[in-house]
Image 1 (cartoon, rainbow, N blue to C red):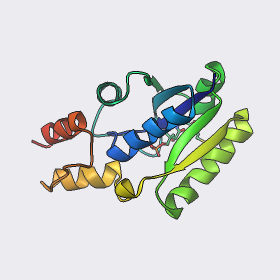
Image 2: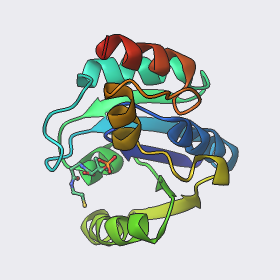
Image 3: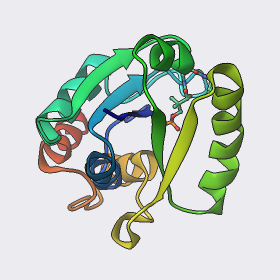
Length: 156
Ligand code: PNS
């Protein structure tokens, strides 16, 4: 059994995230989405509990969803994950992800598998989509439906 973990802030999850989770499910026997703390993004639009709940509403029932406040590799080691899975939209993402992947591998030996973001979702980020929604722009198609609804409610 191969187990993959998709970690991130997911404030909130986008269509791009959902696509990566589903593709990970095609490659690994078990997939978990883990909402984790990012010290560089201290406050979010959604609470951690809200993010977890929204992800649960959107993902395939075979995918489990959890939250972790500590070091990522402590979770992957404790629960015996084989790989981390992340999406790459551009070379900017690569620059951001490379040191984290290398650090995680150095700390615990875990590899990070990068999936190239589907071309349909390459321009979507949670922060950009939130900004558009905040000023009343149309964010249709950027989030799965339950998340879209929750984002509109936050800004109403
Ligand atoms: O979606 P993000 O915010 O880009 O994801 C970054 C995240 C949350 C995966 C990263 O900040 C993380 O792993 N946080 C947990 C704490 C940790 O292990 N930090 C060291 C990473 S090398």
